Length: 260
Image (cartoon, rainbow, N blue to C red; front, top):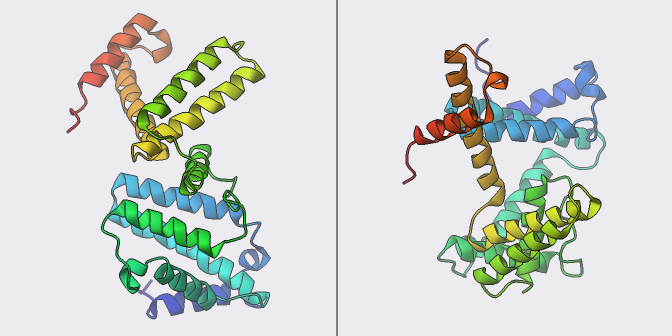
């Protein structure tokens, strides 16, 4: 199949044809809600491609994300609500408005200053609404907690020091220890502890979601190393005792490159 000329505009026309009277029955049957899972899945697949470091895979996955954006815009256009041009114009105007240090007369010398200015402008845009209003509850829990925490901090609801956050972490651990294991109270205390740890990460400039994802990847690598060692001795992991598993874990850990 030869490459299609026309770039973005031609792609938009292609999606319009798919949604047209003589288009694809599946595409014509979709609406915003029927495609919501697709939007989430494509975004996660794009993130996986970023982590894999494959330019070819990332370009493909970004195309799938773009398909979702254009398809949703076409659905709205078919209903006379808005078009892809409205989507582009809206985000372009918002980006320029929220970057006065680039497109206006202000300055911001560090990424932290940019974030502070972005949040302040966003609060001004949504004046009259609640501080935590509009944060999507469909986010992964760690990301949701980070956004809630960041919004609250933006209006001054913040610990005075990192040490104060550590004190709160220890307080939550003590309360969890006092709760009956497996009880609703214990579940609540675990939630409190996790939320406080998210704040501990934020206070240090660490993204809790990315930190946990990195640990998950590290665990998988180590466990697969353990499985390989067990398989080389003719056994499945279920046939390896816990003490030997610990030895295999430590061996897998020692094979990792030291952190810089």
